[in-house]
Length: 300
DNA sequence: ATCCAGGTTGCCA
DNA sequence: TGGCAACATGGA
Image (tube, rainbow, N blue to C red; front, side, top):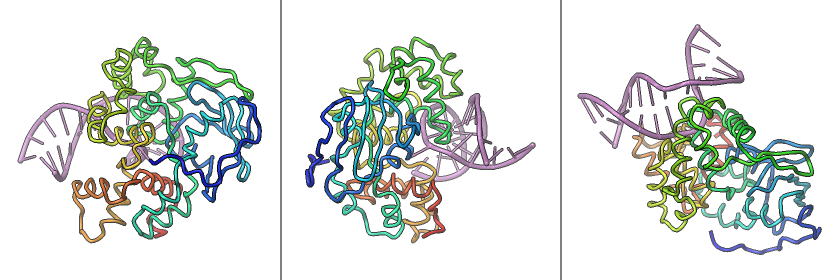
């Protein structure tokens, strides 16, 4: 994505890094709760009027009051980067194909941002995501954090950092299974070993093209195209990547490929590659969440 | 009880 | 390429 569009700049009201307030700039809509609770990250918990969690090892609390974003514990710049407040959301929305289903999703989810998550925890969380509901993925994430992650105190209580790959590699497959991972345990364990050993260089892979990055990720145990696309989108900021899960598959077949009687899997894949445009990942996430919370096919 | 969940993998027509 | 079954777990 292009550099921050600073229309109506983000203005610092409070100067302290440990506790701050920023005024959300421009006319862009932003919805913190929607952003943190839309199936991108899995560890944020409701705390008072805001959310408690960890970013880059900083535990803390984030809260939105109208156009003010309040933070404690997490440095302002860390939070701003994580929340992708610099994304040009008008540009993103303007790039979408004109489709009633998508317009409805934008109207309902337009305040959501695609996060810039730490690579390892994003990869690990989505390895555990297969055939699980969002609530289960959260439960596994919290269990792993509590058992193997570092505890960090914050102004609103303790939180746990996602365990480093070295820690999970050392813990062993059986220990991971105790967090309810089931058959996903060996996948997470073996991937943790590859990352810990440096054989899988997640940070180094930032320089790769989309295609090469996808291929590298798919070489990891438990990572197929769908999970790879999630990590590309939610971690590597590859905003054109479109994860195709059961929801998106159904939406594309029923609303975007209606001319075909029974779209082939290849047709769905091809559409998702380019049909949603250069910021297709955003379109995908709006459609996914809108459908998941009940704005299903019937409403369009 | 039965079904399904932000899939991946191996196998076969 | 496309279809299929196995793979663990838990909530509705």
